[in-house]
Image 1 (cartoon, rainbow, N blue to C red):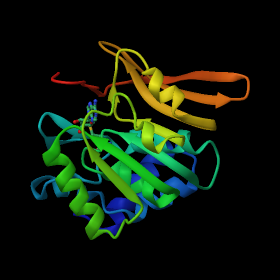
Image 2 (tube, helix red, strand yellow):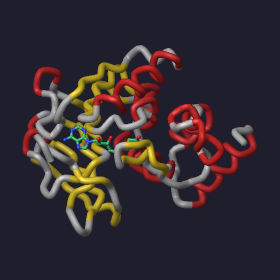
Image 3 (tube, protein in one colour):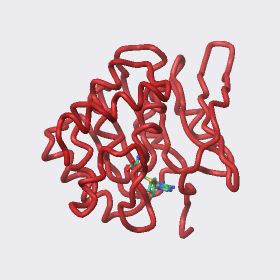
Amino acid sequence: MTSLRTRARLIEALRAQGIRSDLVLEIMKELPRHRFVDEALASRAYENTSLPIGFSQTISSPYMVARMTETLLQGRQSLGRVLEIGTGSGYQTAILARLADAVYTIERIDALLTRARWRFHRLRLLNITTRHGDGANGWPEQAPFDGIIAAAAPAEIPVSFLHQLALGGRLVMPRGTATQTLLAITRTPEGYVQEELEPVTFVPMLSGDR
Ligand code: SAH
């Protein structure tokens, strides 16, 4: 069931888990998550869990998407230029597209990116630029970014991400291997300020052939 009631229940669950941004919750209420998973899984799209999207990858849980988006916003109502590493299903990308002037997203698995592009087209999301390839070095040609978000965990934060952050911008991503932590790093005039948010479980950020 993809009824409005099912979606409303998910929004209430996110609120109960501590998501405070009405803006993020409103966008998630409207955006059809069932369009970002296989038809066979569509009936589970409004459960608060990650789901398989093929190629050993997953669409992140609604809670994690909400938490990361809210953190990226830093209480603002909109974002300028945003970089995303790991397009996956494109669900997080679509949410960012509603908040940002422009979203740049990189995915290393071509078949996933092809599907995601089709979804952006169907939903008339015109401010998304996609790239197939390794995003572990960011997207220097399009930098600086007001926000950078990654849905795959490297062992260490790539310095290129820090360099590509605009002043006042924020990077939100998991770091770690066996145990991972969600980090928020803000670039201030005094330097980079890092906060550790919570323990998380993401797929590894792969580079090159790995
Ligand atoms: N936000 C996405 C998450 C997908 S899972 C969603 O909710 O659907 C993370 C994605 O990161 C996977 O699709 C994986 O292929 C991709 N990924 C992992 N390492 C990467 C890298 N170095 N460059 C680009 N994409 C990468």
